[in-house]
Length: 287
Image: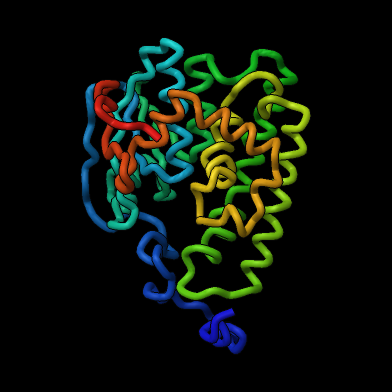
């Protein structure tokens, strides 16, 4: 524990909490305690019915991976325009984005093929919407469909412990504090064990069929055990979850996943800030 963390030991919460925007570490500018737009900005509209406004965080990757998987199946109506939302610059607080997602979080989708156009926000809702719209990546068998949704909702409820909990305090916080790191590391390892034990008896999360449950879980927990998230693979001993690693590597090898994970990425050696056509991937050495 760093000497700076001793300050935390002496912290006494005020009677009434007040927002101090500078007290938030690397992502202080991405959150605030009020909702609504901070500035007027009309979002761009491309040529396709599906308009995605996002960033290649794990939640953003879910949607672009599914869209690329749908296109790989030959679902040509799943063609989409993907526009970058730079959360570090506050794009998520523009009037245009807030109209699609009043919660000001990526990803957000507009489907202009409906009258009136349909807005879809929250990554799990977008996955269900697209899977049902295109009749793909949700099992037909009712029991398997229920299992798929079990794991989809598991991911939506569990990932905040990994992202806003462990990831924030271990990787992004301005100084290390042992208590929250220990607390969230314990929870993340419990989650990894839940996943590993399930995959000991199943190829995918809904059984033998690849589904939106896998697409939801992989960008978070797959990236984690593959060493792509928070530089925490050794700390969490992810190699010990052998079934989860097997599954993560299998998903990583899918061509649609390789494409989807770089859409709306604005960093690293391989990135695609915007995507409007399959030809946008030409010349990229996909990871």
